[in-house]
Amino acid sequence: MPRVAFTRNLQRHVACPPCTVAGATVRESLEAAFALYPNLRGYVLDEHGTLRFHMAVFVDGEPISDRKSLSDPVPATSEIFVVQALSGG
Amino acid sequence: MSDQLLVSTRKGLFSARRTARGVWDLDSVSFLGDNVSLTMQDPRDGAWYAALDHGHFGAKLHRSRDRGATWEELGVPAYPTPPEGHVEKDFLGREIPWRLIRFWCLTPGLASQPGLLWAGTLPGGLFWSEDFGATWNLVEALWHMPERRKWAGGGADVPGIHSICVDPRDGNRVVVAVSSGGVWHTKDRGKTWTAHTKGMRADYAPPELVEAPESQDPHRLVQCPAAPHVWWLQHHNGIFRSTDDAMSWTEIKDVKPSVFGFPVVVHPKDPDTAWFVPAIKDERRIPVEGRVVVNRTRDGGRTFETLHKGLPQAWAYDLVYRHALDLDASGERLAFGSTTGSVWISENSGDDWLTLAEHLPPVHAVLFV
Image (tube, rainbow over all chains, first blue to last red; front, side, top):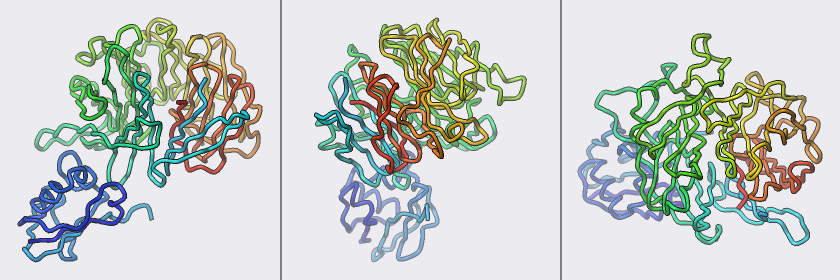
């Protein structure tokens, strides 16, 4: 089962320690994580479920290609990392 | 008389208090490091609301029921999903996303409307909550109104609602001001909307559109609580006043040092008394001659006094945004904060000013609580 970790900067707003979830895509994996941490959803996705502009998701070190539907596949042994995109210098 | 001021800044929500010795001092901070857009106090239950704009993590709303000691996160408005393939553009052809960008105004309903809150947002959605901000509903009629397509970015890159006035005589009557998109009235709590901008003019628009309702760029709109038929408007083009329930407007010209600015406040009991913070218009957006001043009229705009005692009168480039000037319920205490992190307070209607802070982050809003 993939493991999902969130940037340290999110922990200040919502407690969200790394978690192991069931999911074959980024969408499924993140939804499973949001089920554990409901307040986290709005910090990572906008109201339409799209990845926020200044956020980034990596699967095993590679940025995802589908930021809208989050359809990128996630192998069972993957590490998903949710992080801020650099902005503002 | 209010003894506490909330200062919303780019890097936190600061509180200042008046001490027993009559001195104002900063005394605490909430959300340090976070971008706090504005605050609201609900007169019905005393609760404070703070709107945050995290940038990376989106716009958020928090409430405190213990005057800032603790905060709880609330729900936020959600924009509807646009029709498939719909790409919306503003009047100038720039794309407008259907998603919450920022809170730009929070206003409580009347005492007879417990739990009712209004939120004006960027990019132009008006929302209401009936459960103290836990959940929000879009005012569909305003969002889907064809005329909204003629709105454009003004105070921000996208259109936004920065002023919401709930009529103290009838809570179903609400007036909102849009930068840039005019002043819109509803008499039925949002079901139908009409613009009333007669008398306003927009010099910055093409000649054919100078008087068009959607061309008008109000910067801040206020209604006198004790005389709710009287309104004051700081407009991009100057100062306007209405004495007929905001149905028509009279321009007030030749105000020195400038008719341009962002904020306006009106005395809670005297509709003829209002305050402004003038600045040089589009070309520079700085105080005239590097002097920070406040303009006050006490005769409905026939004459103005330029108040400056205690304010920097040389080499000062403080700009004051639309929510960054406030007046307490007594009408005697005023405060304003600037983009360069200065905050000043007056306890005598602006005659004299005290410096509260000079090194805060950029100030978005101030509020007496």
